[in-house]
Amino acid sequence: MPPSHIVMYARERPCPDVTRSRERLSELNLAWTEFDIESYDMAATTVEEMTGQRRVPTILIGEAVLVEPSNDELDEALSNAGYEIRVTSRSN
Image 1 (spheres, rainbow, N blue to C red):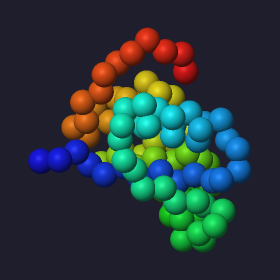
Image 2: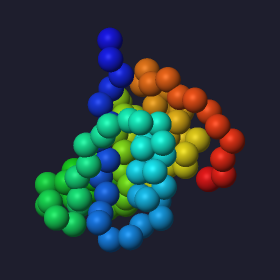
Image 3: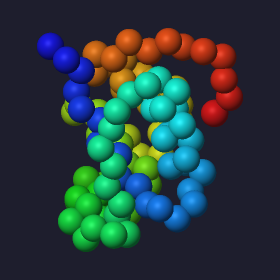
Image 4: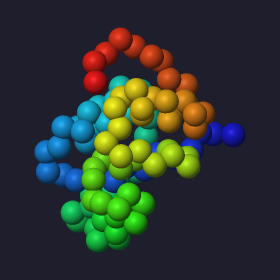
């Protein structure tokens, strides 16, 4: 069974947490679907319903909902969803 699809709710305005999460997913050569909460009202509503706020990035991996995750939290959720994560030395 393939790993769960990854969905990221973000914004185009500069945000260090969004940038870091995008970079980590790219480093791992993973594909994801991204919705801009400032361009799509439904995306903003979805994030607000899940988290009670409009915080980004909000990332869905399987049943996990991550809000502003560290790289370690992101890696753990990916691993739990069936992705093979190569752990490297890094700072968060």
